[in-house]
Image 1 (cartoon, one colour):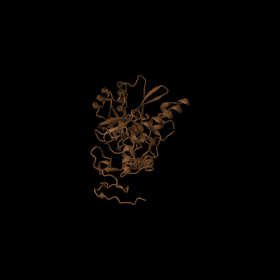
Image 2: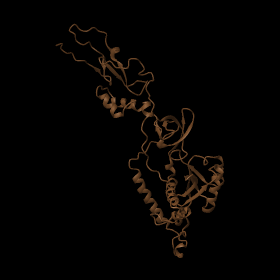
Image 3: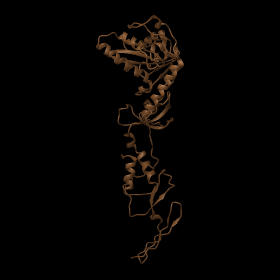
Image 4: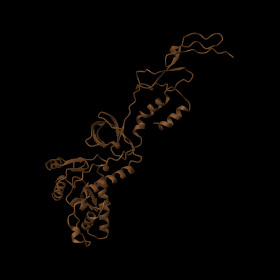
Length: 374
């Protein structure tokens, strides 16, 4: 292993110099397998917000939530932030989840797009058949990248906090859910108004005229959403770095679990199916789907594998060396001794240096000056 590129270069320059030194050190450090496998995580990428059409219940996120030993199925509309919550008392298999989704869709309508993670039961054949039968586009997120379905993750956090407070105060969880749906956001519209164009009657006294349906100003709300997303992107993208795109057959490093310290070698077998998502085949033949932020490009050394394996691992500082820029074995410069180019002439009687056929990299012959033997 090595230190970083700058430290390695400073360490080498402290004692040595050769032409193209910086590139040589950079190539050695960059292609070191141990350094790559134990390198730092990627920096975050620029935010890629979901495209949201001004149509209620058009794009819906779905996930599971657990609270006090109970499992819940939570659905949220990306446009209105309206939440549907169902208790799953008999498990989370595909049949139960499909029936709960059918119940929700029968009230709110069938969404065009349904976003979920890639785990069970959303990866089951029975669920795929349901999606096809109901004509829904199913988008799954990469494992360990819940940010791709951030809307539902945010909803889970909000509902959990509200229900925990309700349970602690012996309140009614359904009234809590009603309160969330009826509370205006910064756009002055509540989720119920954005989804149904009306306010919901709650425990607070309200005039009957306020409960009449009233269409919202969609253009005004779209402008507010666009301005909010722009501010959010500006804040999030501070320090973000766009990672280069990867192609099929690229050699990469990835992590089975983001908390692992060591990166694993693999190869890209498929780009997609979603933006910044890749299918990777590991060395043991297993396939994994990961987001781009959990993948690194693997740099192979182009040098001859036999290079540097000899027992003599140090250069003789008393020997003249030449640099060959046209070596076919590697992309770096190769160093060899000038002894093969030395005329086997004995030293002059006066002890002067024999004539050496030494050339520069451009091919010009170097004339060694004659020096007085003092």
